[in-house]
Length: 191
Image (cartoon, rainbow, N blue to C red; front, side, top):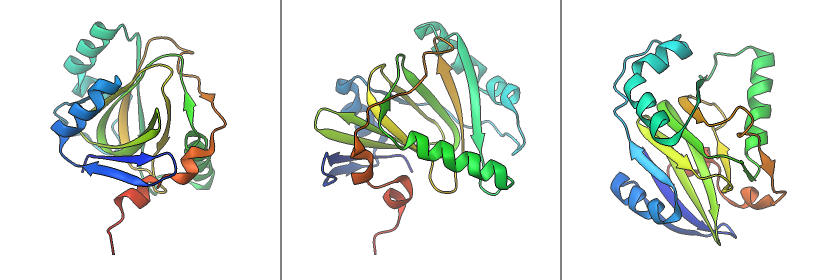
């Protein structure tokens, strides 16, 4: 389920909500776009980029026109789908994006299925936004953040870009991500 958890920079939890309206209300003043789209399209587990984009064509076209996104693609990961070399590639990608970074353009993602967590480092707080199917998150250019897909990634997300090279990560070197619970810990049941 979609969730927002707020932490102090030292990792102390400050608040939590699963109410999507409350999440949108709390993120909006920070410049973060959060909204729900209907994620009702039935897609096979082997659906490729063209099939996924076609299923959400109206929303993709609307958002692209509103914000000048010229490039759109799909990233999809399923647990157990990979051979050993792919698993190593996935683990390397996860490790890379667990480090705080920023981009020269907005980072906008729509989750078609599965989940992932964006950690937004704003002022002296970290906003952990667990996104699931139907969630659209827009992170403004220059926002310090990181992303966790979990130890066994399962998600399909549509990504929006303004420029081919605008999404290159500029890593900050700040180790703050090591003080905040990872996605799997955020979702673990409380004993």
